[in-house]
Length: 181
Length: 258
Image 1 (cartoon, helix red, strand yellow):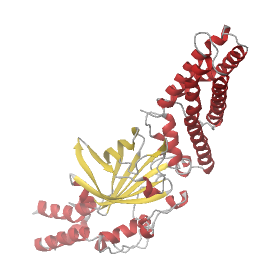
Image 2 (cartoon, chains in turn blue, brown):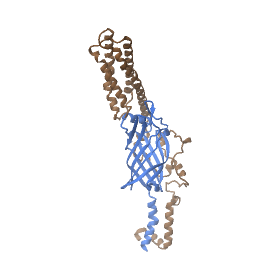
Image 3 (cartoon, chains in turn purple, brown):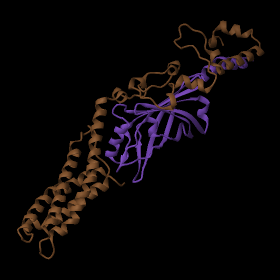
Image 4 (tube, one colour):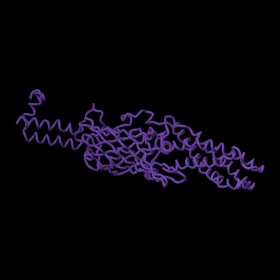
């Protein structure tokens, strides 16, 4: 009987507090890769410098991921500096992604999120972007592709030999998240 | 048990029956499920009042800034980007500062952007002029044999003049092209990597070549105009010109193809 009461008290007072406790996810590692297409070129720019955090509170998780645009390396410094100019990286050094999810969604193998992306001083929304989730020990690996389009940010596609690159610049996202205790 | 929750609490729970405990448990769990219930009014708490959300759109409206008409993105100042929205103020949300970015990386600078713009603008002119320069350069290469003549005989004066004109046009445009590359502002803290290094290294071949070629060409032109065979250092005019054009073409291709 005493054990039953103890259990009940635990359920009444401890479980709700535990369920409502804040959880913080931090970005342990990341690889972000943009891909540009030109009739004479295919190039990928890679950055491992993204930082991110997700705070889950009251059943909702708010995520923020930011990456300095100057950290993308496409294997050609001239192209990277030109990219920096095109995305107005001097004035707006960070590309920022925000999204909000129900906490339960984080447990799904496929996470669909409405992303708010800030780039070049402008904001665009990408709805229902699918990310795949996989457990890696204590960490969670989340991968997906953001279907970025230059004109969504009023970026005129840069050209080489008078031929512009494609408007579609998909960004592959490969991230590992760690739950902070 | 006394130490667990205090005697008063124990006594109060003692009078509550098993079913009442179950109901209390159910109530507490409901309070978790419905945040509005769980939000006890507390003047000391700095948490804002709960807002009832009826759909995911409502939730989004709190979180995201209102989209621009027609779905077009609007320019935002860095301050606007950092300013928390109503939804962000309502709950715990991560911030750029919280991610540990230094202020310089969050706010940027218009001066730095102006430098990038100027650099990019000058290099685009460099690119266009460089492409246009290939026309008189390769035309000069093709008219070269006609200017020199064959088997020791001088070529026609008109072909010589045409070749010289094309050569000097190419040289003039080349130096204009080089000017925009050399005068483009450098971005501090950057280093060259990739094929652009080959593009820059080839300067050490085609720049001296573009200085030497017109000089040797002028000497050869005068020798031919005097009815002499091309001799002395002027004999290397065509070799220097071909090497220069080759290095120039390679420099062009190095930034054109991956």
